[in-house]
Image 1 (cartoon, rainbow, N blue to C red):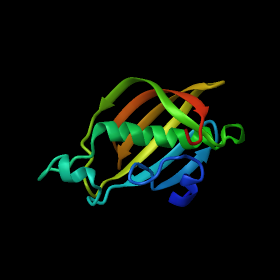
Image 2 (cartoon, rainbow, N blue to C red):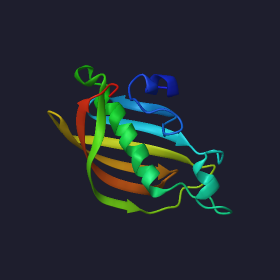
Image 3 (tube, rainbow, N blue to C red):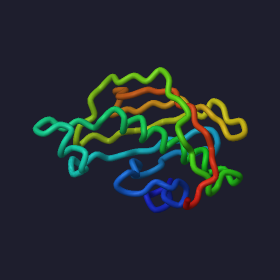
Image 4 (cartoon, rainbow, N blue to C red):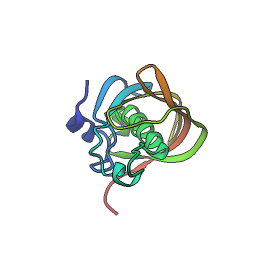
Length: 145
């Protein structure tokens, strides 16, 4: 549905910190499914861990948050804003994510009132869940400081 250039038109993240390659499902303000293909060439694998590369759990959570941001910022009234973490709950890591894996990122927005919201996220590789998290976020005006 959205390629990397189209994702960049919605959220402010850029390489090397843009952690989405595509959006495959999108219901603005409600739900998103995105993907991140890990080739092994990502810089993070050089140091995490040499000889046994693993995609860090914190980056899995960030990828979920970026996917959720696509759903939030796709609403016309939120264009040009920035989504920031306000809290994390129930974060669980269940499977290692390694080079060659495609991380499927699903986020359901369960609350969105004014500048605050909450999303339930699940990252999977194939049929296996890699990470789950409940994310609270705040919307703020974007733009250069």
